[in-house]
Image 1 (cartoon, helix red, strand yellow):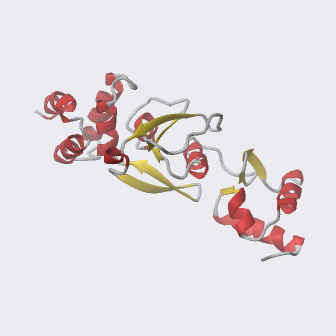
Image 2: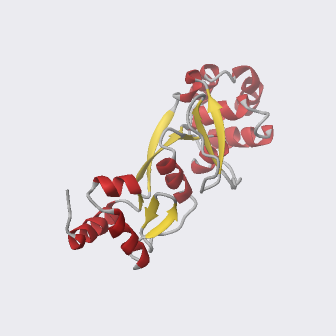
Length: 204
């Protein structure tokens, strides 16, 4: 394990060059002591963006960064619903919270930054259509376009139907998924009965 403070600072710099966001546990596992982290924060070499989460002070700011931060803090979660739709650029909606799907018994934060909207899914739906996208050096799990559409139509109590229809229309227009693939995901996701008339109307 690295013990020399100067070597620890060099290691910290190297880690931040590879990944914009780092968890305190990752830093400790790399041999960087808490005292070194604290000195680096005080010197402005790194920035503490949330409890146990650090970033490079000159890191570019973009909307997707909040997804990376959320994935770091809640690694079992999957970006879902309106946040997934926005990530895939299929809506003009800019959610003020990150929509995140977790399991029925998974830990959920009480107070958390970035603000999140937690939805709990059964094992039947939780692991369907998960993709991994690199955002700010972080591998972020995000539901695929077809899976996201199925969730939106199935959970109409959480999201207005107009947003689901908007996403479906955009996905078809941009050819992000074929009608057949969207239908299959809707069937697997328990949303076919609800989605079917809209899909048929948009593809006839």
